[in-house]
Amino acid sequence: MIALGVILLIVGFVLHIGILWTIGIILLLIGAILFLLGSVGHAIGGRRHYW
Image (cartoon, rainbow, N blue to C red; front, side):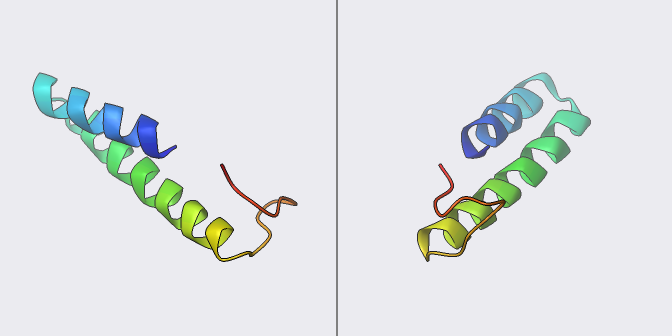
């Protein structure tokens, strides 16, 4: 999710498409939150680690 968020941010910035920029930010934040929760050991969606 983090990689997809970064890709959408770059594409949205280069092509000046606001919706891609917004979706990229949202995916980046969700991916970062899931990564942090998974790295401290909280089970997320039935998984111990979120990759």
